[in-house]
Amino acid sequence: MDEHSVAIVTLGCARNEVDSEELAGRLAADGFRLVDAADAETVVVNTCAFVEQAKKDSVDALLEAADLKEHGSAKAVVAVGCLAERYGFQLATQLSEADGVLSFDDYDEIGERLRNILAGKAHVPHVPKDRRQLLPVTPVDRLSVRRSIPGHGHAAPDLPEGIGPASGPRPVRRRLDGGPTAPLKLASGCDRRCSFCAIPTWRGSFVSRRPADLLDEARWLGAQGVRELFLVSENSTSYGKDLGDLRLLESLLPRLADVDGIERVRVSYLQPAEMREPLIEVMTSTPGVVPYFDLSFQHASAAVLRRMRRFGTVRAFTELVTTIRERAPYAGIRSNVIVGFPGETESQLAELEAFLTEVRLDVVGVFGYSDEENTEAAGFDDKIDPDEVAERVERLQALVEELVAQRAEDRIGETVSVLVEAVDGGDAEGRAAHQGPDVDGSTTVHGVDASVGDLVTARVIAAEGADLVARPETR
Image 1 (cartoon, rainbow, N blue to C red):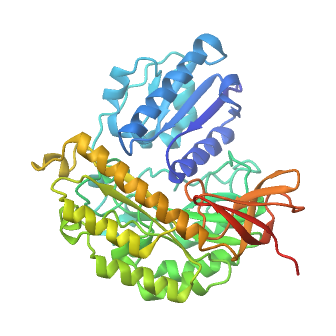
Image 2: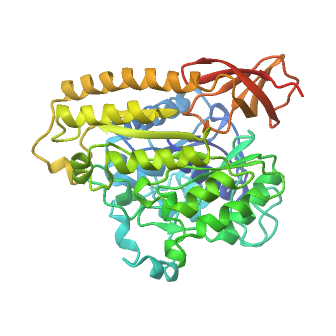
Image 3: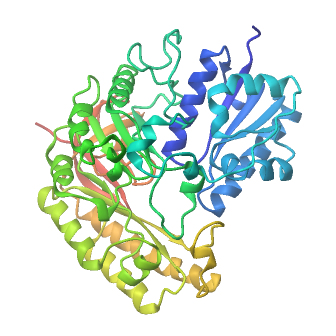
């Protein structure tokens, strides 16, 4: 069988990173050679469709890859991921530069699909459908239905060495980033019906991965040099509900923290309305599990939250933050909020501002509302003018930057444990326990002898926005 070269370009969230590494594992097992995009015969772009800017970035990445067909070695450009799944035939029709647009259902046969495209065989793109309809409504019945779910794939017994664990269910995966942190997908899909979000329509209903699969993959990642597991899903607080145990995350976290080689376990995307005392207790008291709370508040006004089809109040959210900090005063707490949602009044925006001022989170992502097709909110009548939405984003962003800087300054004098991700002479850059990958700032430790993957104990001496500056703590 002829060896083909392939590159995988990943956009979007950490969940997409896991999906790309599954594709990489499948392709490597099928005889493909993984290379950089400039040297690849086929460039696979794993796209994002979260918001309008993410869609534009994905299209730009596809167009950039297409340029390699004229100025590089590329013979084919293939779109996969959320944008490809969401638009399918429409994307293929409007973007002729892409030689193929594949669905999640094509992932199991990705090698065959790419070979056919390279051979000039036309690939018929899928017609998008609501993937929630592919599984039973009742979560516990979903295990009986086999569907192709990215990040959940299992390999044949003869999987080559170095691609996924050596035993057990053998999830397919090939690392594309050799850093000390790796995402581990807890689940896929979502059962919530937030009025502004279309993600469940193309990611499907919520499906948890079995604990045994997660532990096998964690052991493999630990053997690959990973020191921090970043647990990802659309809704981590729902993990286990379809396995018959809604508190399964509480029992899983200590087991993941005990895996050889793993020093830290971090959980992302927690629904505030689904937080519970036992989970908070485990996340703030278990050695190796960092007290890091990625809480998706989205807003603070109860009236706005109801229109968003979400739950919560200023009082409930404030009490949640207070409870966490009582258990772990140095816990990291971050969130995202949406401003300019249809019908949002000045007083409701002020309520959000007052809440954020009171709780002073470590990081807050501010997004302006925009219509997403096939969502309930897109049909609301009381839309706010886009210019006004932009002004509200700018106003809230200015406040958030000040609050985040204050919160970081409060950490001056604090002792932190920094996972080193880069070294430059006597300086090391990485993340303290309260800083998640990519979006929560970083910590630079001056005057330290360290290597990538080390955990360095340091004392914070300065803050620059959300970023910290520290020096090694002397014993």
